[in-house]
Length: 114
Image 1 (cartoon, one colour):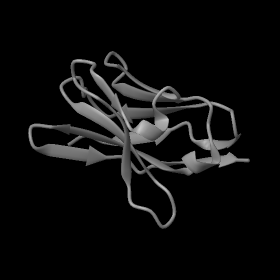
Image 2 (image 1 turned 180 degrees about the vertical axis):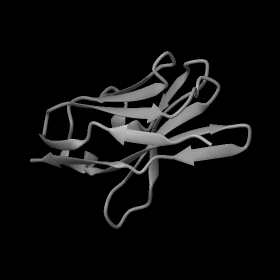
Image 3 (image 1 turned 60 degrees about the vertical axis):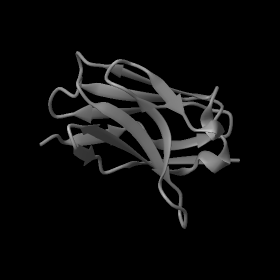
Image 4 (image 1 turned 135 degrees about the horizontal axis):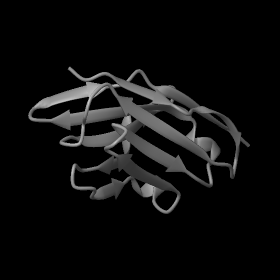
């Protein structure tokens, strides 16, 4: 079992930045990790992904603004969010997956005011 804890969410003005963290209870260096988000009334969707080897992928809506990274020494994956827009408002979740198993965190709220 792996427990994931997201942090770093909050209220920010449009154009601002936040850095989200996804801290794991044990090493996830072998796992792919994704950030998802879910706005009220909408389906949860993938925002950014990073493989165990460090390859990244982004949703078109955040390309050039968000950066996913990982620090395996800290069992943590980050999501740096710049140039935030009101439409980025959502609960952000991290998901770690490997060997047919997946784990979710509890989510962290990001609210971007206009």
